[in-house]
Length: 510
Image (cartoon, rainbow, N blue to C red; front, side):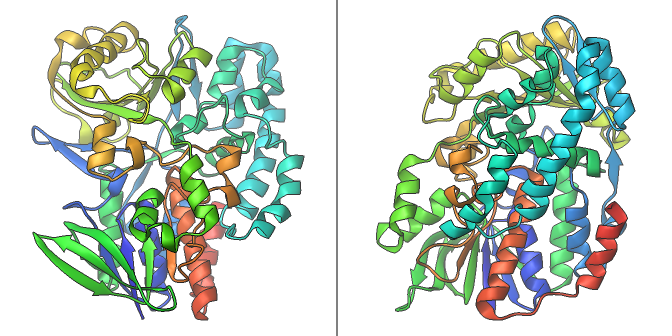
């Protein structure tokens, strides 16, 4: 049996590995010249930079992929613990570190707000309940039928999923700074804390369970380790191979895909296809005639995530006291979030995520300087598109904020600085309106209401990645491959891989 996997982001790579473990012949088709999708490695002036994700949570998900083939992840790629997990720098000059260890975390909160520190235990217990239901029970569930949503609804209502995460944190914390610290997580998966369902409070419990890690050599090194694992076990990769069409047979099933690569078109037959790119792209190739009414309505009503501006730069002096993951918060909160998700301009005072890998991985240390990237959430191209005129100005805004808040003198200490913006996500990664994380994790875009992991009217077309259930972020996209595996096994009558090997992985992290 021949399977085609379109894309080579983490969801697509995990799907390819899981299908190969079922004994299926797998070929991966990637439009770019290199693997990784949003997690590609970019090179500027001879220096490597992770293009996207830098935080690894739920490390067992990657351990499982190696265990499927009787291998150990740690033999291929080392995960280094981050400490602190994140450092939050507030506009009033205060600071809060999110750290491992419940008591350490409580002590850090107490420095800002003793009364909120007393409530941290209650918040954590509720977060753990959200995790047990929202991730362990529903994370890899199949929500392709509305009845599956109805079965999950009582659990979601009981946990207060109809509230936003920002409203949810108000039930436990009074200090706005503490509330911000525990409602930031949706921004890491493309959501607005003011509107994202409180079910995403499970992220904090996931971080407590698995920790926060960084792959030695960068996230790109993890991508390469997964590609190498797949190749060792027979998965084929075709790079610079853009899918331009999907052919179906008389039953409506995918029979082949049309590919353009190295300037020449070809047709690749298959028995099943897994789409790892933006679902909007898959639906566009299928055309309205092959979509269900629900899918057509979903296309018309989707709300994309925000866009991303990322500046990659090297300083000419070191900043040894800067944490690996630093979040520089603007003085504004509600108004700024409104501008990011619905505004028609670039924010004059963006909140920023600063990544300094040398803090954790000495391999990124440079004599006399540091490698950084800084990310600013911005409107997607459907709301703001005048980057040609505004890019240089916004670069200055970002560097000025960094110089004032965490990197003194950086504006005069730049060796080089290169950037990407929502145009890169649209033109290189084929993301709808240049959204950084596909669609927003709203309640009305979750579970059955999200793009499904299987096309409604094409019986052998499956979807993984940020736009489908369970959602964006590394744990979400890698878990989407579990949903795909379950559906393929059901549809094709295949036996599950040896779970004895996986049991040892689960025991290790329990």
